[in-house]
Image (cartoon, rainbow, N blue to C red; front, side, top):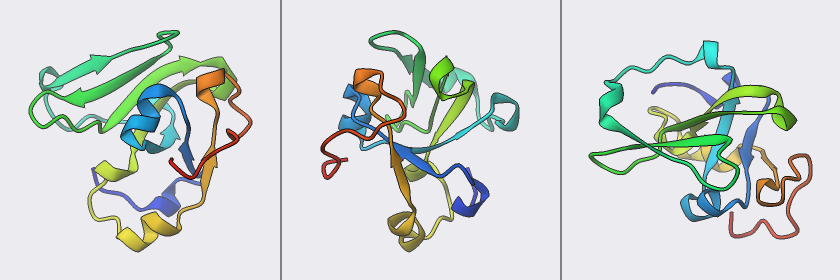
Length: 120
C-alpha cells in the first residue's frame, strides 16, 4: 500500500478494543468502494471477536494486519480500516504527528475517547 496521511481527511483512529489494544492499531477508515486489494486474497486470514461486526484481516505468511472491514452503523456503516503501520512510503515523522481520534469500541461508545489512551 502506498499513500500519504493527508489523503484521509477524517483522521487517524485508534481505540481500546481487545485486538486494537494488543496491535496498537491506528487506522484510517475509508468506504469499501475506495479500497482495492493488490495481492492474492487466499494469503489472508480473518479474525473476528465479540459482536462479529468487524473482520480483522491478517497475512498468513508474516502475521501483519494490513486492513480490516465490516459494517458498524454507529461509525457510518460499511467500511475498510487500513493500518497505518502497513502503508509504504509514509514518513515516520508524519505518522508520529498524525492527529488521532480515539473511539471506545470496547464499550460500544464509538464517539467518546476511553478514559486512558497513553497505552494506545
